[in-house]
Image 1 (cartoon, rainbow, N blue to C red):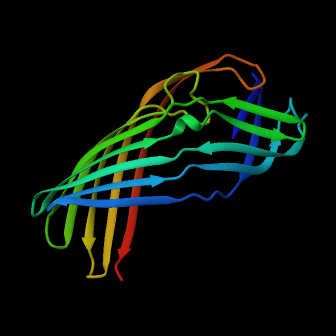
Image 2: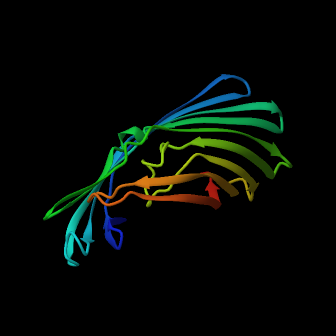
Image 3: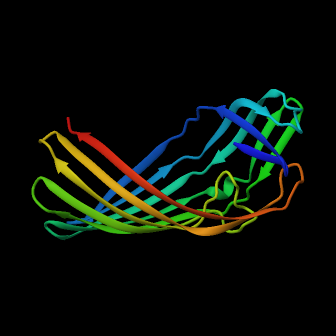
Length: 226
């Protein structure tokens, strides 16, 4: 992570940590052809052990530091509806408790450095479909809209220049054998342009700018059945 102390100085922190959480879920089939899934992933907190250096705060020296960040718990609800024997409609709604991310705090022997966040909760909505082209090959595609937990330029961190997003996705599954299935997928994410209007943790600024971004995701997977 990088923190700007003054117009000409960048402070840097790097650290690692492990965190443990849990997941739980339930699948319901209220009628033939309809499947509903509800899942929960617990919140986690990371205390990242690492080092920090800054020309201003540490006079250029590297000092031990701990960065603390609270990650959200997540609730997901999904629907799979059979339209024909070879065609299915898919839908998902997901809520992420990002409002628990109040700040990013960095603790050093000489004191603490806090970057305010105060994010809102995040939401994700998607709809798609899949089609059995043959007994071996299934094709799928979908679109999603994600509401970012960052809703203003004063909350948008330089390190995390997030904003609302539109997802376009395609994929396929190939049944290699009775026990092995191959999955491939591609998503392009259109991220809305957003501004940054921040003061630094040490009182410098304001620092203002604009963010333009997009993301491409490729995935390949193998599933086995025992």
